[in-house]
Length: 304
Ligand SMILES: C[S@@+](CC[C@H](N)C(=O)[O-])C[C@H]1O[C@@H](n2cnc3c(N)ncnc32)[C@H](O)[C@@H]1O
Image (cartoon, rainbow, N blue to C red):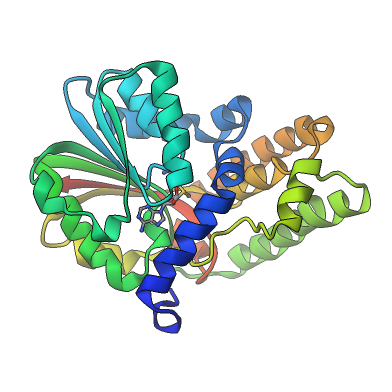
């Protein structure tokens, strides 16, 4: 990450401004349509639900965004607190909570770097981190793991789903060929064709005019070695697993297209997900790693 290029205060200001301005559209792309979500995330959902869901327990959702995942656990009986830096995202979360009339669901708007975890010492049974940590500068990751360790009860569980990177992958010739072909296909299908045939939705075009890009200012995959290092004192690493190489990015970008072509692209996203699954059986996710490739992986931790 580029923490030395920008001050920490500016880093968080940039993220907050970006999420307040574009969070609504980004959440729309990130959540996908219900059918696309089912195709791409059903197995992932079963994995975190099996690990975290227990109606008698509590859950902290860090960087909860628009609150859809907090809501999922609260609707199934868990006592949930979701925290996010963006007021726009917390407003969206609160309206979800109000629609569901859930008293076991709370949201708080706060920069988690300044969050007073000591006040919540050993309060939670579970922590869920869905694509939040890679928005932090590397120098603050260690502190965030300390905070998670502080608020968890002994034996508590953490499920993270984050873009990771690794320097220990082989990047053999097969992987490099897959990479080269995939990036060209993605560019053709998601940039060139929609440009040539006017396939982008009007809303997306308006967002683009407004300065939108599909990444927030400082997000970047996290080095897996850092996670292992920062976890070593307080956590046992139970499992690390690669889930999405190209397919999730493809599906998100296809949300920017007109509805008339979305069905065709959903079919392609499903195909791409199958290819991801096969590749992740044939190779280790680390073999595909390059500094800025978003390889979305889960990490399961147990508080010692
Ligand atoms: C990719 S979104 C994920 C949102 C949600 N977990 C989900 O899966 O829909 C990342 C979220 O992290 C939040 N975020 C970024 N930096 C933060 C910080 N320092 N403190 C709290 N939230 C932060 C953003 O506002 C954004 O909502």
